Image (cartoon, rainbow, N blue to C red; front, side):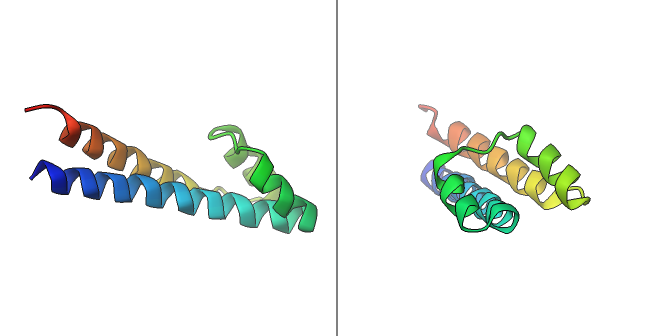
Length: 86
């Protein structure tokens, strides 16, 4: 049962990370064009700073970003609890 928990936790965690990167990549390419796409691969988004900048630039609160971030944290907790020795 712990193996299933680890698999589910890691899938949630990695999937959320990929979605957050896609969100970051799309925002940077929209704001800066091709240069933004290159910078998105080089620079790491600040988990706290990027949503605030997105909110200021776009004018909408990035609730999706925080929901995905929360799902990633839940996946990390599930994987961590499932990885403990019996």
